[in-house]
Length: 459
Image 1 (cartoon, rainbow, N blue to C red):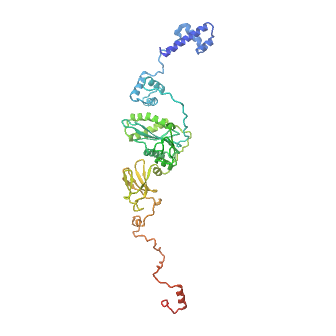
Image 2 (cartoon, rainbow, N blue to C red):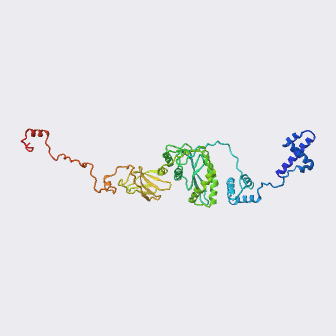
Image 3 (cartoon, rainbow, N blue to C red):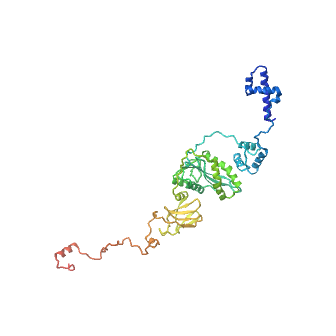
C-alpha cells in the first residue's frame, strides 16, 4: 500500500468516527467540521455522499489518475540517460542548466534533483555544520582583490596543473584566470600585470602566505613584513596593501569560488575537447570567463569604482617583474642564472666592468639590464640581445663621460680633440708665462724716472 492510499484510509476512518459522534448528539456540525479540518458546509456534503454511496462516495476522485503536470516517462528516461553518459559527475544545478540550454528541457531543478537521488546517481548533500558569520564584502569594486592558485587535473589526459585566479571581493568578478604548470612568482606577476593593465591599481590584495607572497621565519607565526618577496616589493612600490590570510576559512569567498570552478570548468574543458594549455587559456579568457561572470558576478553595494587608472604601462611593467642586482664581469657580461648577458657598446663609457647593474626578468621570460634608471639592453629568454635600448636625453648619465671616449664618438661632430681644461678661452689675450722675461721692479722704475738720460739697459 502506497502512502496516498494509506492516507485515504485514515481520512475515511476518522470521518466515520466523527460522524458517529455527531449522530449521537455529542458534537455539533460546526465542531465536527473543525475536527476534520473543514467547514460546516463541507462536512454536510461528505455526510450526504456517505449516506448515498457509502465509503465509495468518500474516495478522492483523483486517485489512480495521472497528474496533468506529470513529466512524461520518455523525458525522464532521456534525462537519466544523458546524466549517465555525457554529464556523469556533474552537480545537479550545472546539469539542469545544460538541460534547459542545450536539450530544450522545461521541467524544474527540484524534480531533476529528486529523480537523480532516487536513481542513485547523485549523493544527497551532507548536513551543514555550525553557522559561521561571514565577512561582509567590500562596498566598492577595486577595494580588495583575491588571488590564489588551485591544483587539479584541469585537462583530460594531462598531469595536474595550477589555475591562477584573480577575483574582486565586492562583485566576485573574475578578472584573470589561466593555467600554468607551477604556481610561483612568475605566474603571480603575470596575473597582476593582466589585471592592473586593464582595470587599474586596487587598494589591497588578499592572498595566502605562500613563499612567493610572504616571508615566514617560523611556521605558524606571523609573516615578516620587513623582508619583502619579489611580489611584496612590486606591491609596495605601487602603493598596494598586501594582506595575508592565516587560515582557509579566512579566504572562504575564494575557496568557494574554486569549488565552483573545479566542479564546472573541468567538465566544460572536457566537453569542448581541449587538452593543450595555450588553447585552454584562450578558451577560458574568451568563452568561459564572460559566461561565468554573467552567471555568478553581482553588483557592488556602492557603484563607485576604487581602481586607480595607470598612466604609463611601461612603468607598470618595470614594477611587476623580478629584479635582482648583479656586478658586471671583466668580460663586460652579466650572469643571470645559467645565461651570460653580453652588454653592447655604449657611447656613455668604454665598458661597464665592475659596475653594479640591475637585471629585470618579466613575466614573459624576457630580460633587461638597467644601470640606475637607464636601460642598457634587452634580451630574449635565451639571452640573445633584442635591440639596443635608445638613450633618453632627459635621463641623467650615471657617471661623467670620458673626454677621450667622447672625442672618438660618432656623436661628436668635430673630429679634432677638445682643448685641455687649462687652455685659455677664445678672445682672451694670452698672459706672459712666469719666468720667461725679467721685469723691472718698482725701485728700478723710480730710478729711471729720476735719471731719464739712463736707458733701461744701463740701469
